Image (cartoon, rainbow, N blue to C red; front, side):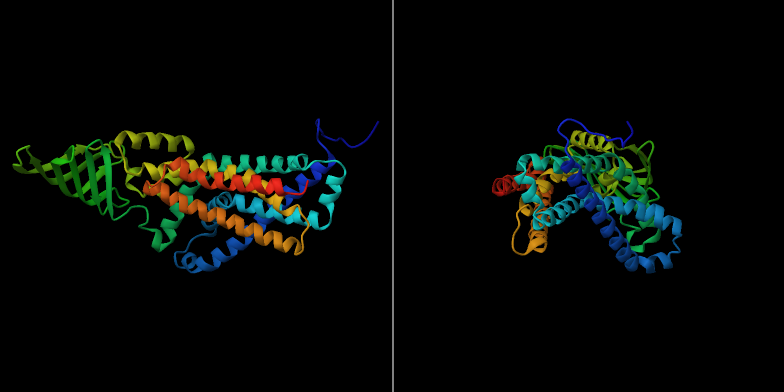
Length: 370
């Protein structure tokens, strides 16, 4: 018997395939549309930089846009998912397709199954990109900006860098540059809250492999328990400091280029040193999981909100949906700042918007037409 081969599994219905195609098709279309708009506007804004710096087309396309666009997509994947669900579900409701499906004996809970299947596919892709693909791609993007954009050339390092390298031991570096040299270095050692020893040097350099700092001259200052001080002027500084070159960069920018394994190792390293940047690193780690997981919550909100036929149609649903979605993004940004400042534990602050909107999702689900 000849015929088309159909792939199915227990419980799978034709309506599931119909909704899943609508969901993923609308999602991909919205991403493609927004990406084209983003690239056009970004190119129009940066065309002078590209021209003045003589950036080759191959670098613009493969080093910049090919790495910049995926980061943008993963950051706003939840927004794209939400708008996609709102758009095609409200259209189905307006055309009374939802009513017809429910009238055939399909429960609202069963109707959610293809939506969650699509949300799982999007979440899995977004999570994989966040954990392993996007971070290394950002290295090429950052290098392109430093090479061809004037304002990004000195963005990697702060003018003044202060890091804790061990319990009771702090390093201050001023004017660190890409050639692994710095204008000034201070190494401070504390006992409790009392400073006991300092080392100061100018025009220093670091070997990134051995982590050894060298300078022609340096000064040491030792403070005894009775308050007496002793100064020494010495030559040929050669000291080992537990400080990697990557730690000299801006922490929030550095962690973006690390895969999840590297990020976890970096976090443990900073914890052992008692670093004051732990909150920033933990926020970066938790957001890589929380943003993709929000796909399920936003999908549930989108379906529950747009499955009812109301006066105003698709436009009203999209308006309410966009308001909720941007509220979610705003909550994320606010709570992340609370976490970075130490006002809230990092895990709680990052996951709090998901918790709040999960409650909203359950409420809207209960109010949705059954």
